[in-house]
Image (tube, rainbow, N blue to C red; front, side, top):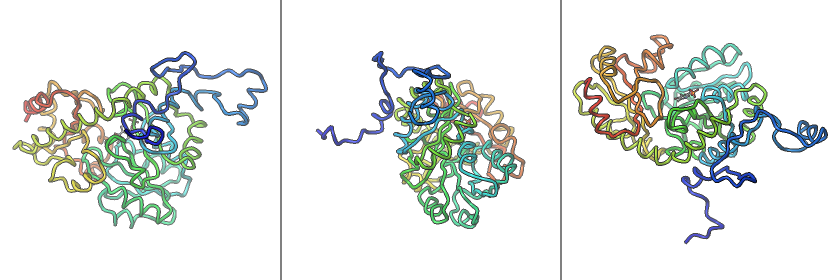
Length: 393
Ligand SMILES: *Cc1c(COP(=O)(O)O)cnc(C)c1O
């Protein structure tokens, strides 16, 4: 038996236990604190709280016990010093940029990122004098060439949405640090159950908690994880003043989601692998994108930096948009919706939904073909999912 004083808790233990502080009611499950503000014992105590002399809760835009439990649990799972929870995944990305960058700064981003993130960088950060250069996710020399003296952040998602391109987190972290930049990784597709970017050298991890952290498609939320001096000061400072904070109800749902994260991810990955293998054998399918396939260009890299290959499978149909729409419309089990990371399998046509607001040229550059279909594999029986897709193939 290991010495109980010295053992570091395992991932599954942290997922169930980290961050919980029981109240005087001795509750077993984590409570929800739906309160907008907190009371003080006296006028002097209020003054001491507001001045920062005495730590403690003041107002739920600043701190809330349920939100804090979620933050501490996710920080433990990612191996980060500090986590701040946000109202959505986009709020996490925006708070990171707004908190850490200023006018005149530059960022280098993978061009294979979530559609709204591209719009945030192009339409909104640009407006405040922060410019972005987009590069190919898998080309380290393109990242290097794009870095300028005023570059502050490198941003990527790996595996990317929807083409599952894998970036080399360690190589890009060395590049970032050699140029005094921070590496920001959107870890939405893997979650800490499959990949821990901070251990690979990244400085900040972003989450859309809406996806696998919730795991059952109920709430919208996000998080930023990293060092205290970066996330605790820059990002939290922005958040408490500017306001896109997480509600305690949502934090509670995400906390419960974290408790089953590891076993859900194992099941998503196992079914996704089987679906990808099956799709590869279908004559109507041009190409399958899944890091678990030996044919995936970064299969080896994915095997090195992830513990499994994820739950998202995308594929190009030979028949273009018409074939893609017919396949989607023929399904009876899959849900036609743009969300992912749910127990229910979802099916999406990226070119006309999640990536529909990009220009034709931006889509072509990102490799989003008209015949591309994305499946976020849920927890139904895999045979039923294959049969469901077979209907429209
Ligand atoms: C959904 C998503 C986001 C945005 O998260 P929201 O919670 O919808 O704001 C960011 N990155 C990735 C990879 C996503 O899938």
